[in-house]
Amino acid sequence: MTTDTPQFGALAGSMRDFRYLPGADLLARVDAFYQWQETRRAAGVWPLGRSTEQGAFSRCTARTDEGELFDGVNFASQDYLSLNSHDGVLETAIATMRAFGVHSAGSPALVGNTSLSIALERKIGDFLGYDHVALFPTGWAAGFGVIKGLVRPNDHIVMDALSHACLQEGAQAATRNIHLFRHNQVEAARAKLAKIRSTDTENGILLVTESLFSMDSDTPDIRALQALAHEYGATLVVDVAHDLGNLGPTGRGFIEAQGMLGKVDVVMGSFSKTFASNGGFVAARGRGVKEYMRYYSSPNTFSNAMSPANAAIVGKAFDIVASEEGAVLRRKLMDNILMLRSLLQGCGLEVYGDPSAIVCVKMGSEALARLVSRRLPSLGMLANLVEFPAVPKGQARFRLQVMARHSQHDIIDAVHRLSTAVADATDDMNALETGAATIETLERDRPVVRRTVVEPEAPCARARRGGGRGSLAA
Ligand SMILES: Cc1ncc(COP(=O)(O)O)c(C=O)c1O
Image (cartoon, rainbow, N blue to C red):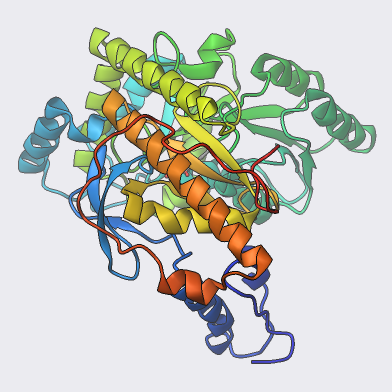
């Protein structure tokens, strides 16, 4: 390792510290990251890279990346309407595989499409009010591909600063003219557009946002952004990955709630949250955009099309979303969301944003958040820790993802287990700060991960204790 190689203890450092590593040996230099990961693993604070043993269900057995098994209530899977276990979806998948085989065996630009994916394009277009839709192998590919496909080096991108990695990376691949505006601030976007147009009236501008931001659970004023785009001769693209299908009376999410159905220039989405599958789409008006995407958006042109089973699953999921059953599932989901938010707040835990299937629970310091994550497996809970750089430094949080099939019992358990973990971790933090413990002695005394699911109790079994730098006070 060189003197510049970053080194951090288990409760310090972030992923960002290892993005640019010193040294000419591309393979050897990544060891610095691995050493940090191992330090965190040894302290029991590496909560990433987990797997479920039987699938993403509301209660499941999971395995840490060190191989430890634990049973838990699962708030870490993004199957918002619980269609992963829907009988009709499963039957559709099996029947399709029998009829079509399991492979699309080609790019959409060649012969990768099937009658199922063509039908799915039409179904999504009808649902959203667009005449043309292009499918992509993942939502990530759709986000990256819509930007890289449309924007050229002389064009500009004006993008919400918190936009998803697929949009940011698509932008970086397309042009150096990237202008980030402050999250959800329409006037900040206006200032960027005005500045660009004061010197450049020749080139294109893509204005980029999301309908529901997945770390903050908030939504922009889509109507105002669309009007702004037109005022400055720009094109708006909205990523609807997290709300499409699961929010709003008809499942059309915030673009419908804001009266913008069919009125946004370009809509891009993912099937991986609500539609029980891999895949994504770009919807626009006019066949020309779709045809251009097919031949100039690399993930559409040079990547295999969605499999026939994926296309059929998503088609079936759209049918459910559009049905009375979909409305019932959405109401159940919203009841769960409201119950979870209210119980968490009742236990003194702060949640971000507006009610949606993403319930982010404020932790603050990364150190405290990691200590909480260390407690969760033994308490029987699966939840995703989100840290810098996915969110700003000092704003670590747990991202709980709610599903329609979570029972009230699951929700009470989750709140009880998370609040217990926070109380225990606050004690741990205090012990570290006063020198009564070290990360090594804490780990030596770490509760054994057990595989018996603890019975539900009142949501906040222990009042949270204040004090210490890791306190959750806002
Ligand atoms: C806002 C947003 N857009 C796009 C994606 C990518 O979707 P997929 O998982 O289908 O690749 C995600 C998923 O993380 C997302 O949160």
